[in-house]
Length: 623
Image (tube, rainbow, N blue to C red; front, side, top):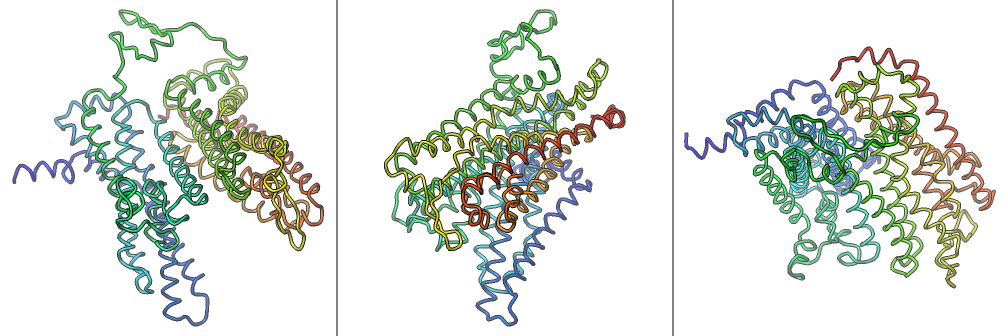
């Protein structure tokens, strides 16, 4: 066999790490159910869209082609979304399972080269993501029978999804090779991906709304940086046009003339860059070894006063003041024990506050020209910030007890006089104390907008045209503010108890689960199902039910924020009760959300205290 062919086989199909990963994961029923659920969702959505599009008794060939094109578009977007959700799950194992230094120490004693280690991990885990893509190919082929779907669009959507999965996989391998963090790095990795997708989509929407896209509403610089936007440019060339070929030069030509090609090529090159850096550093101890001195202390440990002694002396720093409940203090303080966490936390707070102030300033200066654009931008920014804070709260809570069970800390805590109630209340209090500075970002943004409305735009003369919008509700025209000023006071009554509910659900699953990944996935699914159902039902009730409708809509932070920004969408309540009545119902709804979430948290806490000993003993010794 030629040497070059043998080398290529060792990098990919015959790589022992890739073979081990594929063989082991193929035997897991969880992965089989995940693949089956993936295909089931695509099939159900395809059939549902086809049934909705072909409900008439007789259809022309043109209508059939339109139905096929519409169904293909729906499942193409859904496939990109599922890949972005599932790719971090499959690739996250590279971070969670290979992050242990002892695992790397054993791996580096083998005859495998650095490239074989990196490519084996990448290809072995990427195999399942690409398998999901190819498994859905028959569904896309079915749309060809209806017409209206060119094969170039089908293969183009597959290439976009594959390039997105490749980039996620290469980034996950780079994080695993760096050995900067343990299993919890997976959750930061997941949050970063969701935040990036949401931020680039919001920036693109803002640029197009301001008329800064191609032909005012076409592609922007963000299109080639987001797989969903690249897919939109591929499937909707008329409503989301690209710049004509040859009309631009340099980087603008790449980003605005061929955004789909730029995304695919750029993500591939960036993936190769991550893989190359991983190959160079995999046998040098990773990035965690940079900046350490002879005593093994990192630069951050030396700056914070940690001392390393000779002959195995323990490192120590000056004692700190501990709260009355040590569990609460430990939970709040340990989250800021690493420089990366401190920088990420305060960067989020600083950038969020700066962004909120910039949003109000741009509206005041006319950069955001219309009240409707300001409302849209405000909702997009605050919803994104709330989503990030909620995910952080869910992940930290769902890993709070599971982490201590895995590292053996829980066994030590159970030997102390700390009771189950004090332990769980301490967890809740410490996590809420950690999340309060983060949640101050969306609350602060709404507060700045409320102050601007309350002061009539800092006394500007055209406040009746900028701070207020004229809208028609039924047959009545009313002048409504772009945001209720009392939103700054009412929103914390909805958001903070909701975060406490998310924390309690995360603690409950963390108590019942052996591992961190299982508890986090269960918590995300539970909170998503409950919050989504309550939000949709409450939002629908806001239109139909007089008086009680806005109260039900206030139970979810998402629908409550939408109601205080777009008061006209309360519907019948606004017509019959006028604006004062609508504002009163929203205030009642905020206090109702506080009471309901408080009662649920108390019930969950009482249940966990009663079953604490039984659950802990049942899972004792689990790792």
